[in-house]
Length: 146
Image 1 (cartoon, rainbow, N blue to C red):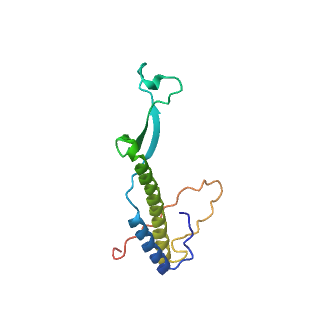
Image 2 (cartoon, rainbow, N blue to C red):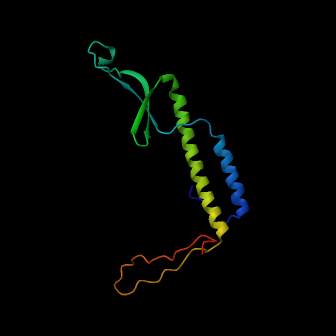
Image 3 (cartoon, helix red, strand yellow):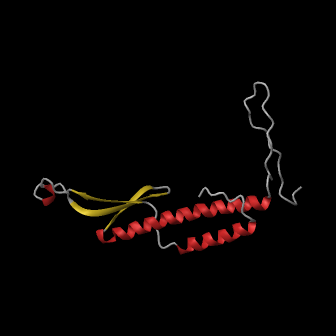
């Protein structure tokens, strides 16, 4: 992410895009969200967790993630699966980084195919007292629609 692809040729960008796709495909199972691991006290006065210095019941994991349209969702994770869930979350971070790279490479490829300076217009300087309001852009029709 944040790499400068401007000096690469179209062919180099295409090869790099294929390499990133191969890496995306190789990412193992993943899940998004976060994992908190902790202990809790049950609240029963006679329980061992109520003794001074006792940390409580656990460890237990809570995997949370945001679900579009419904907010945050959580699921308790058994202690024997905590390491697995951590690895899946790390895999998601790897996947997310590769996707960001893929998008940047594609954008660079689009720019490279259009050519240098294409689409860049020099804006006229604002004159006396103007606040630099928006100018009306000329309408551009798709090829064959003129």
